[in-house]
Image (tube, rainbow, N blue to C red):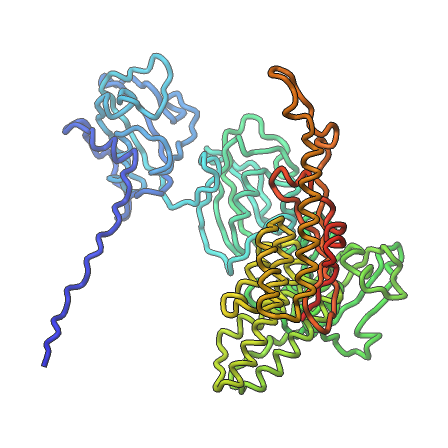
Amino acid sequence: MAVVEESEPEFKPQKKKPVSEDDKRRKKMPPGSLMKALIRPGAGEETPTEGDQVIYHCTIRTLDGVVVESTRAESGGIGIPKRQVLGKSKIILGLLEGFPTMLKGEVAMFKVKPELHYGEEDCPVSIADGFPKDDELHFEIELIEFSKVKVITEDLGVLKKVEEDGQGWEQPREPYEVKAWISGKSGDGKVIFSHTHGEPFLFTFGKSEIPKGLEMGIGTMTRGEKAVIYVIKDYLTQCPLIPFIDGVAEVHFEVELLHFVQVRDVLGDGRLIKRRLHDGRGEFPMDCPLHDSLLHVHYKGMLLNEEKTVFYDTRVDNNGQPFEFRSGEGLVPEGFEMCTRLMLPGEIASVTCPPDYAYDKFPRPEVPQGAYVQWEIELLDYEKQKDWTGYNFREIMDDVEKIKGTGNRLFKEGKYELAKAKYEHVLREFNHVNPQDDDEGKEFSDTRNLLHLNTAACLLKMGEYRKSIESCNKVLDANPAHVKALYRRGMAYIAVGNFEEARADFSKMTSVDKSSEATANAALLKLKKEEQEIHKRARQQFKGLFDKKPGEISEAGGEDLQEEAPGVSLDADALNDDKEHLLETTAHPPASIWSRLWPSGRKLFATLGLDRCAIL
């Protein structure tokens, strides 16, 4: 019997933490260059570590007791403690070593040699002229407090200390409506203002109604969170909350984020706005309706006129029954679906929608053409699409036909993105389908190929030609002689100006399927003529460019070179017997100089005779 020796576990050395600049400075410290004397003991057992903000008073004296500099008012300072973040702020070496030895509330005297304070070679902290940086000095430090902080701006101008964690993970952003208790104190503890009684302070995020630094800090908070946000003068913009900031070096804002209303600029241009009126159940966005979910909603539609004319209300016009629709099928106005998919079950929202995302594409007699509308929507609940767990092969393929049929309808309606999503959904689910015999295997393979080619057709429509080629390749990798895939890929190659690749695909069609010979030969002949036309245009465009003597400048093509290369429109015909749809896409001009010479795509494809492409 063979004996298998246990191999020793492979040792994987841990990655070394990169040496920081502060660590490099510490290595240069000579022994005995820093000494500490305790004046008043602190409380607790914890000491500051990297990432902590330390708030402290500091008085610097010569060895004779003469005060050189101080933060304390009684010693000539302004009375405001210093704030620094260990590992982030620029700190003299002596304090960088001294802070980690101190407790909260402790007062200590550090005797510091020049090379550990401002006399350090390449000291990162600047000092005023006349400061005795070459002398040994006493630093009296009172560590008022220290805590972990979130660094919000790289220059440490805005920091946040969490006092009490909030709920969930959603944070306010533009243009959310925010309600909070807010008070502000100067660095020396004097109250500047307070909104902690009566009505909470209400503001719209992104409208400059509060100081910039405070808004940045609140943008990192969650509902119910309590925090202190430290903001220096550079981020204290004038606003209704603090109209006067003169003479204020920094403000410590104490904030309790009570509530915020989710307001979403869905399109990013201010035209489609969703405002949450009543919170729903669950966490956003994890519990929002997924693609291909069945949604149950009540809604009321109104015109944005003075009368706020109601043109439909499910509670009145639908016998009180909710309206049902399946997302991703293009059965409701696009703006309506986009906003309901951002809702939680039980949520009520108000949606203001522009006409091109409302009823311009879904005409109804009550809504004038070009009218903005407002919907008040309540998402009662939704049902996720059932997966195929427990289905047999026939049940799965029947469901696939339904989804594919929906995709084909969407393609005919010009909703290519939605159609593509249907095909891609089935292709993803196909990864978990295992045919049990040869007949099932053939049906599965044929259906998958059709889905890839339909996806390619959608991508052609959307102008994503490279991705269309990739979809065709997924068919041709398994079946290099697939005529329809060759033809569709040839069309995509033409769209990007790769004539040689297109010629190879059309030529291969004739060798694998004689019935396609006439169509392929016609395409090749027209392709050749078009290439000749492009070369002719090139000669005309650059006529005279190389006919001048040395030193002379020749203009090539006159004013034509100053024109933008035209867009390329494609109308192409796929080899499909049912010929369901026309394919019209817009291409970006090729990046080469030939893009200047490229004719309009519609003319090109009309010349080529490739003016139709069918969905399979």
